[in-house]
Length: 379
Image 1 (cartoon, rainbow, N blue to C red):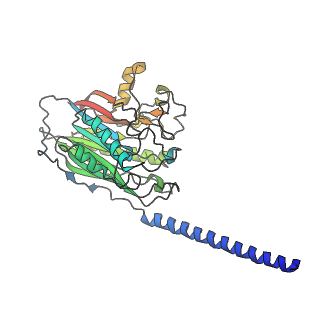
Image 2 (image 1 turned 90 degrees about the horizontal axis):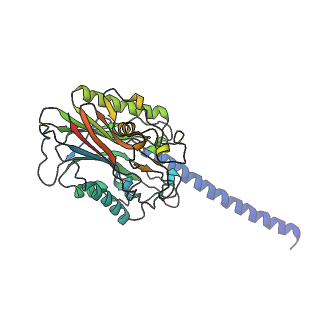
Image 3 (image 1 turned 120 degrees about the vertical axis):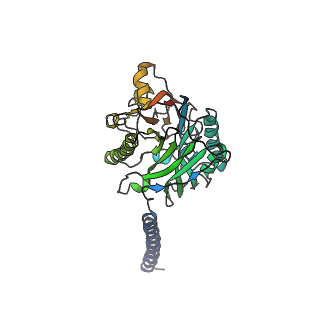
C-alpha cells in the first residue's frame, strides 16, 4: 500500500470519527434543548388566595380555645429539611454533594425523630416547613401523613409550596421532581385556611427557588376574636433583595390587617434571614454573614405593634443570650463547628404576652434546622 492510499484511508476514518462525534454532540444538544423546554413548560404557580382543606383529628372534635383562664399556650416551628438532613447530610445547593435522602428509612427516622422530640413538649400549635408529600429527594414518602400519624389528636392544614419539574441535577443523583409544602397543626379548631402566593423572581432563578407561600389559619376564640396562625417559609436561593422586600411587605400587610381586625397574630416559620442580626458573632461563624444568603433581617420594617420574639430575647438578655442556633451551614456534614444562625422564630402582635422563646436544641440530629418553641398568653 502506497503512502497516498494510506493517507486517504486515514482521512476517511477521521471523517467518520468526526461525523460520529458531531452526531453525538447534536443528540446531546437536542436532549438538553428538549429538557429546558420541558422545565419551562412544566413550570406553574398555584393561585393566590387559594382556600385550603382542614383535616380533622382522628379522635375528639377540636374545641374552641377558651381565653378566660389566662392559660399559658405554646407553639413550635420546625423546618424538617424534607427528612434528609441528619448530621451526615450536606446539600449541593449549599456547596455540598447531597441531593437525595440516603434511604426511605432515613426519611422516616428523621421525620419521626423531630416529631417525637416536639411531642415531648406537648405544644398547642405546630408549624412545619419543607414537608414533602411526593418527592424524588424523599423517596416519595408522604411526610404530611407521617405527621398526621404522629399527632392524631390535632387538627391540621397542609399548604403546597410547589410541585416542581424533574431537576436533572446533580447528574450523579438528580434532585428530581418534588411536591412539598408547609403544615399547620392545632390542638383546637382551625377555620378558613388560606394560601398566599409570595412574590418570587421572574428570572431563571425561579426554577431554583421554585414557588413560595405562607398559609393563614384562624383559631376561633370563645370571646369572638381569633388567633391567627401564619406559617411562612421565605425565599433563600436566587432571590435578590427586591424580592425579599416584596415578600416581607406582603406578609406585613396581612399581619396588619388581622391586627386591625382586633385579632391575635402569630407568624412563625423559616424566615431565611439572621433573626437576631448578630448570629455571626454569637456563634463565631467563619462566613461574613452580611454577604451570605443569611443576611440580617430588616427589623426596622416590622410593623408597629409587632415583635420578633427571638430578637426581643436577644436584646433583653445581651451577653447572657445563650439560645442554640436554629440553622446550620449545610455545605458540609455537621461536625459541631459549622456556621450557624438563628433563622426560625415567631413575630407576635402586641396583644400577645411572650413568656419565652427558645430553641429546642436537637444538635441538628434530624434536620439542618432545630425547632423553636414560643410560650405565650393571649392578653
